[in-house]
Length: 269
Image (cartoon, rainbow, N blue to C red):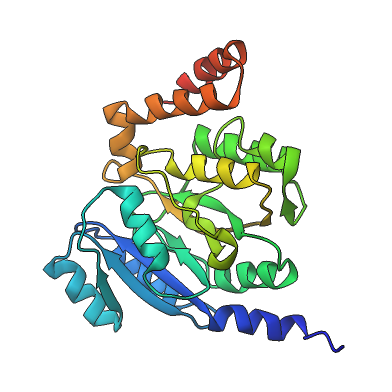
């Protein structure tokens, strides 16, 4: 039997891939996100999914020639992400966050990972941080993520089993906007609606616990934007992030270790 060349398999992934951008209200960074998706080295469909339709999103979509799909139910972030996952019907989906910017080789890299590792449920890359102006920045959170990825993933292309569980047990080093999902392998998975900040962290734990495999590239191919306007910043200010971090550590560790991790994380808020 002839085995298809890896380049052909990458093309097959890209041909059945969609960037779905969950747009919320009126992010001034949406145009930059869309421009970075259109600048990918291999082409892909792009769709905007929103539960808060407005003239701004409609005009940006029109300017970029991108379809807008409206979720008729405004049920929070989990409902938005679950709707976005199913919005295109494509097998492979990247939920591209409206505030973030993607390197031109992001899709080519994750598609190649999924082509090489056909049993992987998702492929993800490392990420960097930028500020409102798009200037590179660093933070305690980014340094902790880098440490966890270096320790438990290293140069491996596959994360699974005990090593995968350890990767997500000391925090959440996997950036949700840096992931390309294989919906066939996700099966009946959905993001949990009772969390606002750590629904992605819980998702990675759940998938790894059921035996799924994650494909990984250490290249920083997504620039995540952090400023006072982002949802992450709002959740930090409200204290919701701290509450959900505590819930996750209580789920993952016996109480004595959980208490220590909560204290350590408190230093980074």
